[in-house]
Length: 209
Image 1 (cartoon, helix red, strand yellow):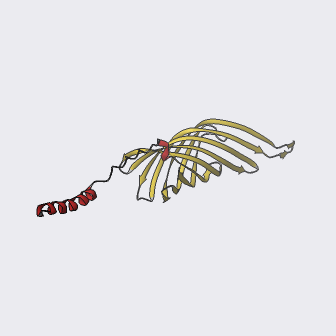
Image 2: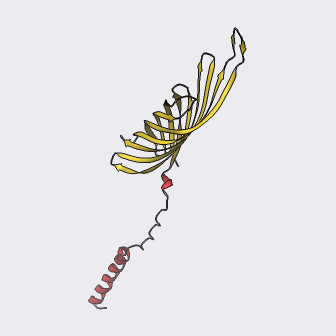
Image 3: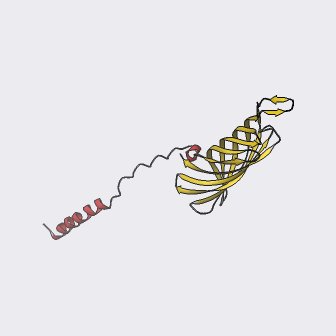
């Protein structure tokens, strides 16, 4: 075999494997975009605390929080829906007052991230309450005889506001714990007398679904 034929065979033997290794791998199919809804960012949780004004007692609240978006780099807006219950009592002398209050309040929440774990927030909202209240009067004796004790029951539906603020601490990407203070102005005879504004101190947690 001639020399130039041998050189041609040797060159072909070198180039064919190199070309095979240099060939690009077949393109992978593009992944289908993930589907989702705005409710994928929903968090649920709530607070337990103490509410006080003329009457005082335990208060419970269930929250759902849905992020809306950033109003500024360090100001985020969320919508919050709350269902709350307060059991408030007081005694004046031998007269006992009791009020059970159901609250439904939609609110706007403005969040201010301080660092990846700590976030401050402020709430403002307007909603409805239903108050079922009782006053129990004791029996009393006068020179003219004894008057038996009696009880007065009534209820009231009215408007109320929420004005509050607090802080969240992120335990992990899906869990936050926090505390808040709040003022709840009631408009109406919530406990059988004039309007009142209760002060609430509470602690709670939120869990991202």
